[in-house]
Length: 432
Image 1: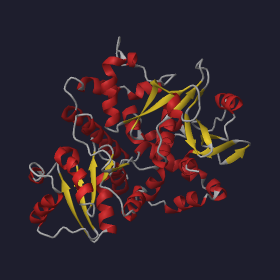
Image 2 (image 1 turned 45 degrees about the vertical axis):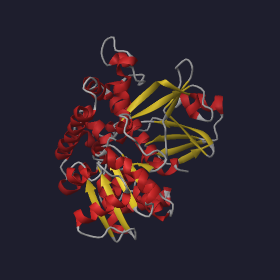
Image 3 (image 1 turned 45 degrees about the horizontal axis):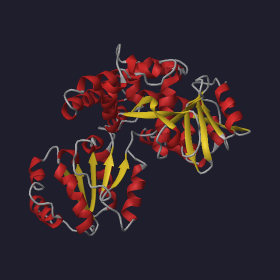
Image 4 (image 1 turned 180 degrees about the vertical axis):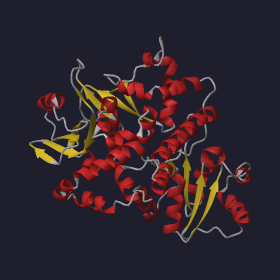
């Protein structure tokens, strides 16, 4: 299954001054597959080390972190020469060996000729546990679930991707219903590679949900494995309340909705744990949309979205029959699946911190704000084909942005400064 992140890895390899690379992302987003695919396609040889499975190799890092000492031990273990000429070293699940993480500093300083790529599903958490993280000595890359275009490629819809790449709006309009059907399917299946692969092989939507539930259970197991015991109940409570938080009329995250009397001071760490684990995304409130947005966002007012739209659908209790009932999947739960989809597409396309706008009286709201070379761009998300957007009009009248994006199931069109973008096209046009 092709991942666009492979292109970033190719650029990393081309840069002669690259540092060891850490690919960060939640469990099951495809980090191991991506690293091995990269190694097999673009290197003559590679070695693969999984620190979760191979405790013996973890012991190599206990006494001496000098790179050439470690290389000699690995050569003995693998029975072959480990050279720096087009050979890749892969450290998987590096969070299981903190000394290996620290060793990256010395590889960068003393043996930069070796290409090293690592992954860690809980790297953000490791940072907060006092591990000697090699700040400034590594490069970081975030891997997300498969976006809609990657999903289309995986299920054999290359021609549809070609139409999107060419921005052939006339033909896209002709095949609009096909795009919508595939989008509905993606909203149900999501972008977790194992789930997608099992669907391709079996075409069984019941199996899809079984696999999604397994992944959700794996995440809960990780709570107990990596989190402070005092925080596990709180983490579980937040995790189990994500759907209800998003389904509120005002989907701003409310600590008091977790349980009666709950306060931010009690649950902030648990929420941060989930964010560091890459299981949730925060989108922060902005009432004054000025550059830089981060300086004007309110860090104590935010919405919480989930890692993957398919997993969110599973948590929401959606059943496969909704795929055959018009476009109801886009309006279920007050359109939160549509917002979730758009956020995932944005994050897969650009480095996005996450902002939404509301005026000071909370009577007008814009789903997302992005900052690009043109300025601050408002994005209004609409489920289905209802395009009434009073909030967007009020925002444009007040702040006069260079243009605005309204995304829905309607066809691509430009009306003055408003670009109407089909949901299935949003990733490509967000990048522009």
